[in-house]
Image 1 (cartoon, rainbow, N blue to C red):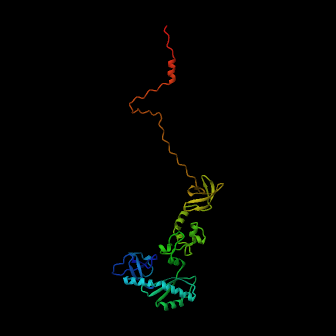
Image 2: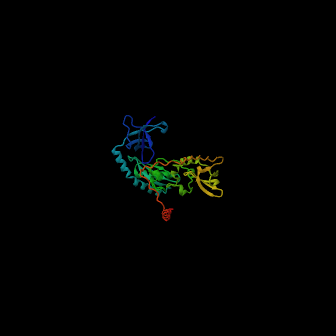
Length: 321
């Protein structure tokens, strides 16, 4: 397995593998380095320290890290970055003059000013050869034009999504993954373009985040149209599913549509669960002898009623013969 170093050229972008300098200490995390690419020398930052990776993760021949970037390289990078807004305005002016059907998004200088790259969007292929010649005469450097898609445009411009948070593509998403309309159908979302489209006009990237979870839950739920039986509402037909709650919307005979938990439904051929045996109640002790009083004091005698005392007073003494 080759030992590689991960390098990233811009924030929130893909990490590329490069070979470390032989015989030198490999660079550390966030160190600026000068690397050799197919487009010439570029300045990037280490996003992954040197480690061994399987050969299956590397594609083609790996380019080497030439050296660590010096303070002069970083100063040169900042100098040419300050010129990018002027170059962008000049390019847009030339595009308007030539009446080209394209929208220029960004201008990017290389760290040493040897190359100037323009990113643009267009609905169709554009012949920009005359534009490139005009830009070369203006900037006296090598000029490249690169067409990008709507998702890349949204990533560069940045913004906020319908959730109220910063766009995923510009805040943390380093690579775009394929998103299909089937994912929206699996999640039972409205298929209106305004509901499932992002700032780029394409399908929301977040549709792919929970798609696997919806698929796994849906496998355990009965299909729409299945005849079921409920212990309380009787027989019915499933008309819809609430996947996250694992509930079913059932059209019961005589009761209408009611949302119930799937676990309370009986499918065709399924027997109802046997009732659990009730636990026997503990026998209550009867005729329990009273415990002797702890208090040694004698209980007071019950008082006689006043009616009995009156009868005693009325009795006459017996006469002596």
